[in-house]
Structures are given as structure tokens and as C-alpha cells.
Amino acid sequence: MRYFGFLIILIGFVSPIQGQNHKTLFYQGQEDSLYSEILGENRPLLIYLPQSTRGLTMAETPSPVVYMLDGNSQFSLTSQILKQLGYDAIPPSIVVAIVNTDRTRDLTPTAIDSDPTGFDVSRSGGGESFLDFIEKELIPYIDQKYKTTPYRTFIGHSLGGLLAGYTFATRPNLFNNVISLDPTTTWDDALLVKKLKAAAEQGKLAGKGFVFAVADADPTGNPKVDPLLTTFRIPNEQVRDLLSKRTDLSFLYKNYPIGTHQDMVIPGIYDWMKFLFSWYADLQLEIFDAADPILGSSKTTEELIKSLESIYQRMSAHFGYPVKPQEDMINSLGYWALQTGDLERAKMLFEMNIKNYPESANAYDSMGDFYMASDQKEDAIRFFKEALKRYDNAGTRKKLEELENSSQD
View 1 (cartoon, rainbow, N blue to C red):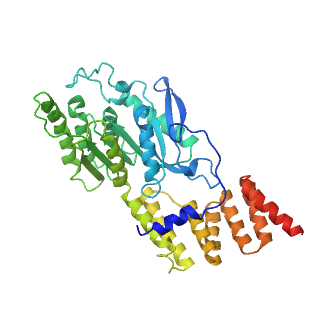
View 2 (view 1 turned 60 degrees about the vertical axis):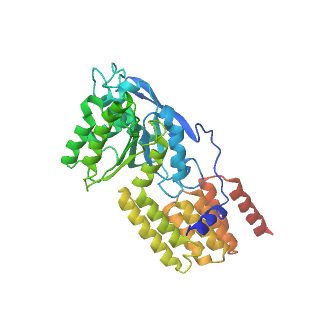
């Protein structure tokens, strides 16, 4: 890849400050819960926090949030896919997984008497109350407790896919993106198709992202199975035909004909993230091209900084709020410049981080390293002390003590 060299730099030249140890659960997740006055019950939650929010000595950076249904079964899978893609393909995101207590009640938007598949629907119809819980209780709670941005994505599978699509149609301002994985589109005489059609015609879906992924198997020749497949295929194709014509939203329809209802979730999650955040991946490539120590070395320091600022201005336009250059990336570039003897560039990059992240201990520690490498002990001592005010790190304290002792000699 064009930016392979830069990725090596990110690994090799980072600040010596290390993060704290935290007890983790479910692949770096943690348990949480919220009592819902609307539902009258306690709702267990599973939370995944990206690296930028887990108590590191770098600044805690607000993150987009992915809300997902069926947290019991899909939290570990989803959080790990998002973690892997979060290196350069998608923005590092918080995952909030809602653990089921009564799946049929919560994930069905209307009550019905019977279902063509023979599914027990006696407790159906609590979807609106469940969405009220998400909108009025859960999202405010997450925003208050964790460092979030207002950019939100919603994902559901099967009945969860039904509710996710229903949310996209009826509460379009709640989420920027919605992913509906093999949804139960037959529910209540194809209610989802009707709701999406009405919302699209009223222009309510403009500017949003919607992924509709299905496992529509090829005909099996089984006279009992094939009619059931057709029952689901008809409303699925109606959604596809309806939204694929729209030019006012980002829509992806994808069929996994050789997948099952369950195993299509894995490629589905991966594909929808890559699709919805293709613009983010493109901008990341621009960052790597501008900053790569070999390909980007022809840029002056001022040109490099202007390029990065321009890229992040465009990124901000996509998110709808200001996005700063990533602290860890700028930090790594600064250390690369320091390693190669380009002191002017190193100083400007470290100064950029201090300006953007004045609460970061790491930013001040890095500037202390710059002054130490420049043999400016007094300035190095000053910045190491500033770093320790923000986080009492053993490595920083050792460097400070060595400098202070050498100054007394």
C-alpha cells in the first residue's frame, strides 16, 4: 500500500507515555445498565469504548456512537469488526449494545394476531415504547456519561432489522445511518415498505445513510421452503426498488444468497461500514499520502499542516461538527521528524497537538522530548512538569528527575 511506510512509523515512533490498565469484558467491553421509567424495568447494556476514550494519557476524544440491538448475541462480533476497521476505514466509535429482555415485545412496532412463519406474536407491539426509551432515556444517558458526538448509527438484525428500518422511516432525525440486516419485512402486511415509501416521498430521508442487507437464498426445489422464501423476497425487493431510485440519500442493497439468516451478519456488518464511511476512508488515504515520510517529504512543514487542516475541514463537513487532526497521528509524525533531525517540523507538529488538545499529558510530554533532544533543558523541564499536572506518569517523572539532577551538577 502507498502508506505502508507511514503505518510503520505510527508503530515505531510514539510517545513513551503508556495507558492505564482497565478490567475489560467481552473483548474490551464493559457492562452498564439503565433503569427505564418508560419500560418500567432495568435494561442491561454492553459498552465498547475505542482506544481514544479508555483513559489513555492522550486527550479523550469524543466519538460517534453505534447503537445496536440483540446485544446478547452480537456485541462481541460487532465491536471487534468496528475495532479493526477503526484503524483507518471508519471513525473509531463507541458501541452501545442493548441486551434483550423481551425481544418480541420490544422489536416489533405493531401488534399482530398471527405471522405467516408461525412465530409466536402474542407479546408483539411494544416497539414504539422501546424507541421512546432509546430516544428519551438511553441516548441522553450515553451522551451524559461517555464522550460522544451527535453522529449516530443504528443497527438491527431480523426483528431488530425490522425495528431499525422502521426507525429510519418514522424517526429519521434520530440516527445519521441505519443498518437493517435481514429484517422481517413481512411483518404486519409489509408495514416497513409502506413506512419507507411515505417517508421517502415526504423527503424525510434526505442526507441519511441506509443499508438493507438480506440473505435471499436461491430456490431450493423444496415445495415447502421456496414459497416461504418468496414471501420474504417480495417486500425485500420492494424496498430495494423504492430506495435505489432515490438520489437524496446513501442507500445500499446487498443480497447474500449463499448465506444464512445468521451468518450473513458477519459480511453484512463489514460491508455496511465500508459503504457508509467510504468518504472517511478516502480522506484517511489523503492524510497518509500527505504525511507519509517518503511520499510526503517534499511538502514543507507549513504545507503539510495546511493539507491536514484542509482534510479535516472536509471531514468536519461530513460529520456536521468540527473534527480536529488526530492526536496520535500528529504525535507520531512529530516523533518521526524528531528522529530524522527535522527539529522545525517536529516542533510545529507538537505545538499543533498542544493547541488542539491542551488537556493532553502526552502532548506536553512530547514537547518536553523535543526540547530535551534540542538540548534546551529548562524548556524540557517546564513541559514535563505541565505533562505531570495532567497525568502522573512514571516515564515522564523519571525524565524530569534526571534533567533536574543534571542541572544541579
